[in-house]
Length: 200
Image (cartoon, rainbow, N blue to C red; front, side, top):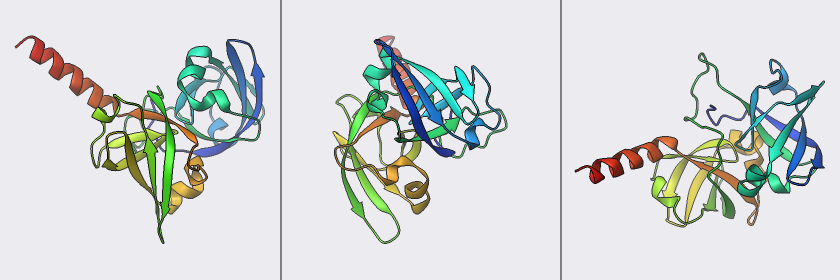
């Protein structure tokens, strides 16, 4: 589990094509300070397992299912990626409950700069919009954000200078693909209500 508070911008060091999978190597520093083999690190919001570590570079196996459903399929050496270690029982929940299980890939529609922040609009596939509400939570490329406006086929978020400077969202441009994870609590509420209606 994660909180959507990005700890570090890492750099893709290598991508080894294995046919139905890739071996993804990432250069990092901070997130590796207490990480061992088998630990989880979210990469652009996608939970991956540390399979190898060599100094300040770690490697994960990314299966076809993950490549089919996330933007990790297009990463190249030199790309910057958002990194966050899994939470511990004493971690502050600075964002919201994030599983690292990407629901879909959205696309940056547009950016509207302001003096101190930037409003970004992101499209999302049909069916996910029911989980979004104004002032609710969503994870975009692993970043916990508050929905400013849920529009149906898209939504907007406001990015403060800290988010613009410390995550990949500062450089994402219209047309770029981003990983989306909706609030898992909304999914549970939906299922519970559906079950209640069926048994009524």
